[in-house]
Image (tube, rainbow, N blue to C red; front, top):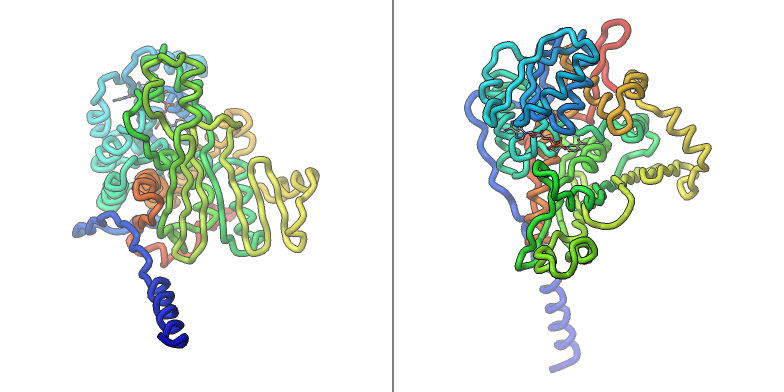
Length: 464
Ligand SMILES: NC(=O)c1ccc[n+]([C@@H]2O[C@H](COP(=O)([O-])OP(=O)(O)OC[C@H]3O[C@@H](n4cnc5c(N)ncnc54)[C@H](O)[C@@H]3O)[C@@H](O)[C@H]2O)c1
């Protein structure tokens, strides 16, 4: 065979191997919209002057939220509290008595009493702070009975449950907000404000995570009610997705206008092995412990999301790694950069140079979001993760009191929560791409950016 002929064959071989088609992303089924069902993007309902609320689950999160809402009796009324444990309800009433709460609260302790509560005709909002498995059934029952719902994170654990939330909200035209408090952190809102001002240019890449060592919960076997206890070991390696994505993803999704101008297209996700927890089990329970005989939760899951516009998001999830807490925020735009843990900025024209600690302080102060400024005093007084919980509660009430669209809607709640199953599916496929459903069914293209609504001093509706 001539050299020319050999070269042609080689080129043909190279071309055919490069020309191989990229693997088609795995995709989940998309349900059809039912007749009469319509989008709730930008949903408005008439103003509710005083929001009547039922709290389902008054453990750690629910009891604190209830007491915060009770501090604003002119904006909201706590009508109902429900928990499996009478002692938790008694503790709530004791606190309410201490603060001379003006309204009577009805208490329920049955495990399915939420069904009865959802049917009451004197409620506007059902606030769900039960363990995650109950969020979706309660939310659906509440919306079907005409109530708006606020759900602790994650809103749902599976993609079909995310669709059930979206479809029920669209069928009933009710608000369904996931209570992603991290979107209301001072830093997170400040970055949102800076994105709006164009200080980063076009946001193009963001990173975030949930890096929270959970040994204290995991090894607390005394508390029977502890649903975060160490699981029994498995006989095969555990493949874990990012099962708690929303604290990190929520803020960066709003920075990147996800669901309002762009959308998350695909995810590639990879899980590590289980080095750390095996070692910790031996340290804490000894080598002969039944927990030491098999596979445990992996150290870390890492995912890359690509958006419809070609932007990228990197997500980390670990409740195992031995390290300080972090939500690992990072944003790069075409003009500048910021990082959240610790807080750093580098902005054009000095994009290669870190701001000094004094400059960082000034940048944060000058760009504090008007929403955070508005509720700053209440945030300091009532706290909750440094104030973000209070800002979130007051912002929810502000929007309901004024009949404005909520900041976090059912599409955000579904898309952010859907990452749990989408990342798991990709990790099971060795990191192959998995399609992230478009819960807006195309409406993301009709909106230009994430906006937070407010009424100005002249009574005019505006957006931040
Ligand atoms: N946003 C955040 O920062 C944050 C932080 C921690 C937890 N969470 C989320 O908040 C939710 C609650 O977590 P938590 O730490 O408060 O847990 P928790 O165990 O302290 O509280 C849950 C409560 O729900 C009650 N409950 C269980 N089943 C019930 C039922 N059928 N009817 C009524 N009440 C029922 C339990 O008795 C318990 O008191 C979870 O979804 C969790 O993921 C969010």
